[in-house]
Length: 417
Image 1 (spheres, helix red, strand yellow):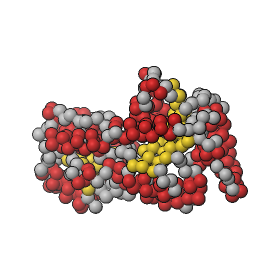
Image 2 (cartoon, one colour):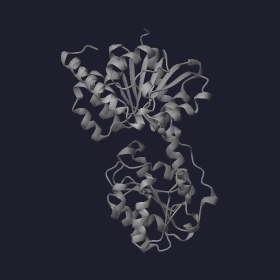
Image 3 (cartoon, one colour):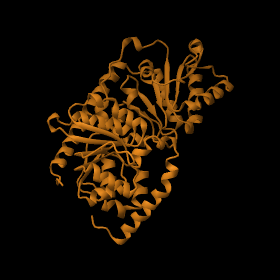
Image 4 (tube, one colour):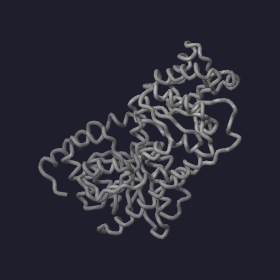
């Protein structure tokens, strides 16, 4: 990659910024762990065929899925880096059982050009695989300088991010990967335009390959009319409170399971409901569960089972401009979810979920209320939901295999240094 004086100056100041920022970054509890790896004072890898970067939890699951789909006889040497301890734990979980390929796990080095250059010299990868939206300028620039291959997989970019990155489009055009695999047509168009890379393709979201077809237990069905309010965020609490009060007027015997997205909001919900004379209880206080109109879940791990017992569900993060939360889990467990208008985080699910009735969307709290009321009065048969959900997922699966074929093809055509 030929660099102009302007670009060299830009990276000089970029490095200076990292030098100044690193001492402060390492004070962060989240970044302090693995500090020696992030600064290459400790190196847990050597020469590899593929360097795969999985920023955090979601990307780590995708990396694991890709590992499962590489052919056994390739005998690849793979380095997978991550930014978080949660991502590292996920990657290390099945590492002991991975006998087909030589896999190393490490914290991602800071994007300081000097550190990145050293890391690439040690790993000497033939191919860099970036998952979703992990585009770091120093890393990508050094890969280009060393004339190595680079691919973005399961690529995504929101409209908001696209507008931000476009302000520095001159840079990203020079750092364009060899191939872009995007997880929706919209994401493909944005990434293709940003990088000016014609070799951009739509491949089904790899996350679909992690979803198992559902089997709804008959024992999970209850006689009580039940509503799930899932992953409720702080910014939409007033709208959700409106839903609670209005639905309890229409269905006095309605049982509501409230799942705050963050447990720090549990006490706020308890105070709000109590002061409004709405009977409520914490899930941990099991003796009060049966008499409460609203059960506030202050423990993790039970949402999927709750969906299987529910007649209706609202998925949070969607009545405020937050991009929405996972509505796929709801219909995969037998309940038709309702969302608000903000679902940009899950546009990759495709319009089919709305066209088939697997998900219902309201443009405001009043429309959401109406949809929930209709669903509670006439809940769809869970076996029917299950059939539609399984058909939808099966049609969407296969992205992992296609992605691995692109990776291997690019790897085999790379220049061996």
